[in-house]
Image (cartoon, rainbow, N blue to C red):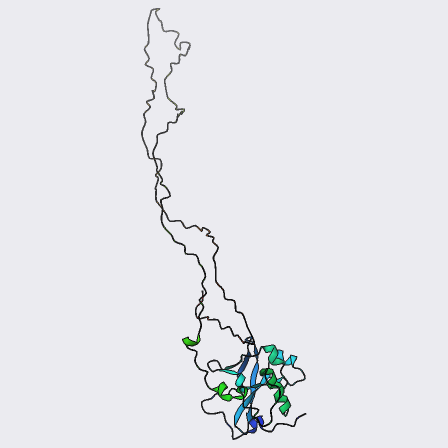
Length: 289
């Protein structure tokens, strides 16, 4: 086992060293992997005393990931040049590794920084690395360039972009008024036969036969007659017109649902990877449909 590397130490052991003015102190910032999953937070900065530059981020893994690193201390080191700042949201991205790969990095515990340990970490981020060559500076690599971490990356311009427009079909439903017909209302005369029982009065002549009350009255037998007028009611039937009901005719707007069906086509992009290429798909959520 190689001896402990005294050249790189935690920032807390260098009281005379401070993060350069204008650069954020990222301790406590959330760290996200290439799959967008949060893996933990920056616990400490590991500094190169000779160059006075940050070489590693000491990341404390989250509870779910530290369980997979049980017995390893729950901390890992990530080379500073392999991380990316998100100053707007105080976050750090490691675009080259997923969360499970980061959790499987060699565990870091206090006093464990040896050159063998650093070489094992480097080989995980630099596939071309085999072993340190004599007379070369181990940290003379982009992985350990803190300027790549702190300095804003060059803004991507339109010249750097290749555009592919994806289109899709959607329904364009128009409305127009058409004659559906008309309604005509006529009055017609129907005849119905009416029969009613109507009481009418008429007079009748009633003849009563009685004994004379005065038997002493003399009478002669002779012809005589009595005239009694007899009256009766007669019905007169006439017709008169009376209103029975009134029809009010109007139009009103009625809304009904009608199902419209169609097969719509939509373009989609298929990304084909050739070689060892990292792809990060950033979806534009500026407009919601």
